[in-house]
Length: 235
Image (cartoon, rainbow, N blue to C red; front, side, top):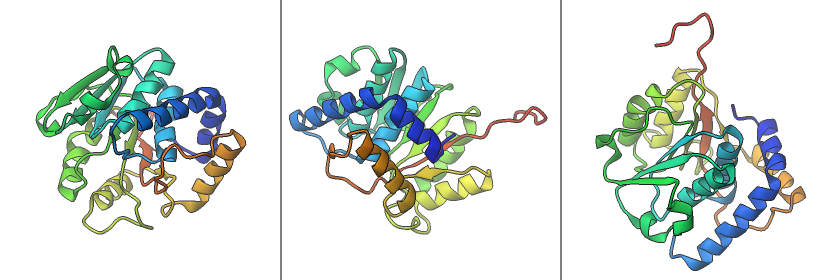
């Protein structure tokens, strides 16, 4: 689902809208008291995933002040379709996000996502919540294992170094991916510097090199759930 060539194609196809969204995000950051949790490239890939795949249902586990939420809502707005379901223990995002983004496309649930019933047909899932091995074991079993084939998934804070720490959320997630034969993509500065440099070059050519905010780690991983082949029964 995610390859460098696919990402480059998405950047080129949606360049004009992405430039506009970046400017809107820059203005939002100047006007609202929030601490961005997604760096520019991982936020842009999340936006482009929604634009390219056009999911009607997007699920976000963890929002904090709503930086990732605002990127996802702009993508749904630019598609002209879709609803974002966000789950978080705190309600900061409900106070910081502008009404024009949230009015018709956002459903926010405050509380522990582990006690909540999630939509059963998301096309894109973004996870950026409690970064512990225990929480990762919960969402890999209770959420990822139940997703339909072909769902796009993003998980934040995996590659702050060349590899995740042992017994960390990232280690649990990467083991889950290996056990299922699933690959992943990351633009993390330390996780895949070559892919990152390719994307930075694309952004320069498309006039998107100026940072929206100062973060440069981009530790998120992106992957798709396994497609079921014709000769294999769905479980």
